[in-house]
Image (cartoon, rainbow, N blue to C red; front, side, top):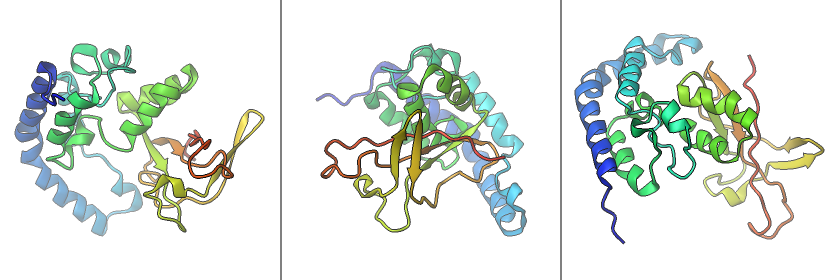
Length: 224
């Protein structure tokens, strides 16, 4: 199999690397040190504050089309064009791999390019499985960088890195999904801009192994 990047992927990878080197790297250490001071001396609200310098980096990246580069080619549809991806198209996994590697040289870069977890994965779930109403309410603000999201997988009594260990159940009851279980260590849940939470749970706990078991994605707005 040929793993060579396409011309478009090569161009985007080079653009990302150049942006990281020219725009992000010169200020990243300063921002990291400032964040350390906030952790030591700031309040809870201060921990989530996004510095103006980072917002400016996001605006520059979006203007260059280096925004939402994670969007998959087969599902991106009009969203890539509407929300800042260069050439208005998504990328295949093969083409996104070198782009993701380039962003991985900086802890800050994924956020600057709006490609950070868990927002990117949650956006893909909404893109592929969300209703039009759910996409309008949560996907579009995520792609626009106006809200954040969280993914609730980890549980206190099991090795949660293996999804087959999930104990929380997600059972359909009419038009609702009833969740029964406990989650913890949910990254980003405390962010004041967190507006949607996707929960992983078992819809059929009696199925052997993973056979016949569906992993349920449940939506919930973050409490004010």
